[in-house]
Image 1 (cartoon, one colour):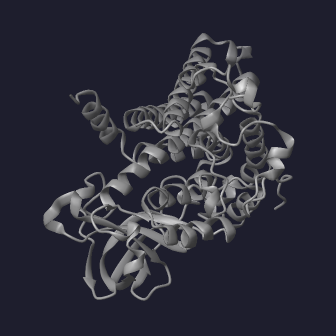
Image 2: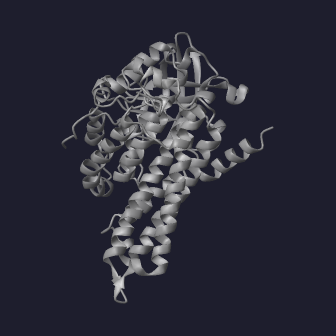
Image 3: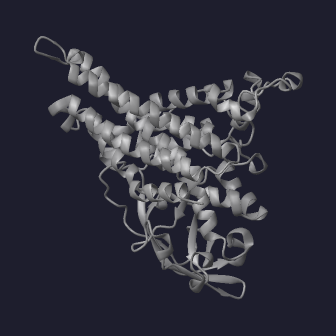
Length: 429
């Protein structure tokens, strides 16, 4: 594979982008003039999202991601899916190009971009191949609890490895009897001198077969309920860590999904996230507020790809002596798909923007992820319908995109659970 010309040095430098554009480095300062005097007349922060303006830097990153998706992902997506092949080389190339780990703080070698910038990139990667986007974004969810709650030593060691070494990590929360009901987990960790003894089983873990380390949620005090949960950083090659078989999934088959077993794993006390017990639940759940806008962006990118394929096909396919695009029913389907994609993108941008402002975005993230996931499922089904019998075959990509969309209604908060979250938020006193 050949990378596009990198605009970013992922070893920790953003100077190359800065030299191309005077735009400021973070989406949190979107549209604020770089000149200090001009900044005095800049619009208030609350006005920025209404401008719908992206910085030059964000536009360049989005274009770079699109170029990468077009040249490296689309030509390989069908093969990866058919062969259930993990795209390790492509993920490494994305890392070298500067399209992964965008959220890692500069203090640990990263670029410290905001969630909105991450969303722009993730939509393009999912447009190229939603399975790749899921596989490559595993670091995003897993690193979040370390960024928000880890000790300085943990951040230097484990976040630094993501940036400098291209390491991969996986988020271990879901269990055979605990998916949406996170408090139902059975995994536990018992303090024994200078280490914890960790036991339990996690399942449906994205990237598990290639992970260098895991974020693991476990009970340290079962009687305390969710306040008795703690997070641990567990390296994949430690004694007692074992993997199950790669799951055979309906879609996104290139994303390596497995069970991870922890059998009397000795976890050093310094790998207790944050250095104290009882913070696991809060760190694990806070991570979703940052990751759900990115998963929503995956859904938008997937739906957009399906829409574009359907639009192109409808111009070429003729029935009753004319292009099917001229049939009112087909045009109506395409119009509805485009409207829903645009609406989902705006919800996604808002959820990301709120996070970048340091505002609580739990409800906004739930809106974005729920709507975008349902939208992607519906849009890809309609794309298959527009292709007719061909859509039901693997000869065209819309069947693969439809299979890929379904899991978006399930992982990182099912559509049903997200409705409950929204309900909880709107009924708070």
